[in-house]
Length: 205
View 1 (tube, rainbow, N blue to C red):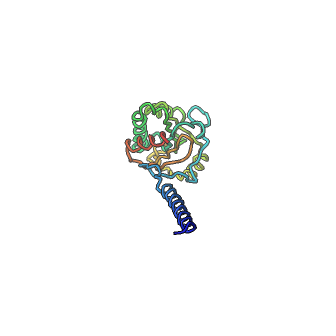
View 2: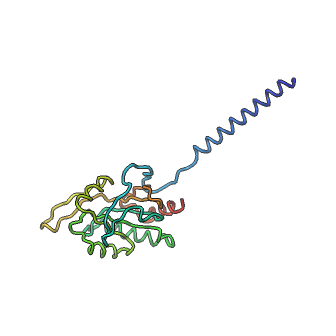
View 3: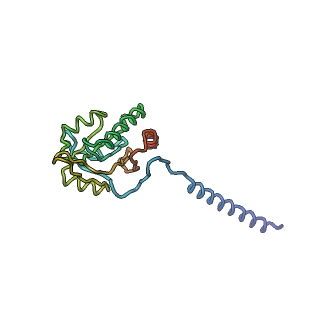
């Protein structure tokens, strides 16, 4: 083999190595695993991005107020017989099981029954589960707007008296990361352990 042919083979070999390396990098990038969650991963969704509502102390709140914490947001009402107290109880347990990271969790509760859920009612209601939980009280117009933005269903169901009505409503929770980005849709009834696992993943990222 003459010198010229030898150089051509070496160049060809170097080119193949370069292509192989590039392919290897490409395959490596494609094989990077996304974070795995128990709840539905809705990262990048174009809805439920923020709100501007008063809390039980009359202070206007937005997601920016809770930057640095993972936020779990739930729609409900104080006279709810089962779904709401179950969810709030579970979230209190989640906070306990997070241990030292429990302070990095913020639970928000937006009432779908602002007519009956006064500031006093909701302060007592949140306090029954965890005093750090924050209730948000929209006006009727604000509720309609935020429910539409969050794709939340709610409907008044008449009772035997004008004040004994109930509220049908969506029962899932929205989860935001520490930068205020919408990440997860957690269905009702999933349990404490899966939520703890998901929140630990978000806190570690």
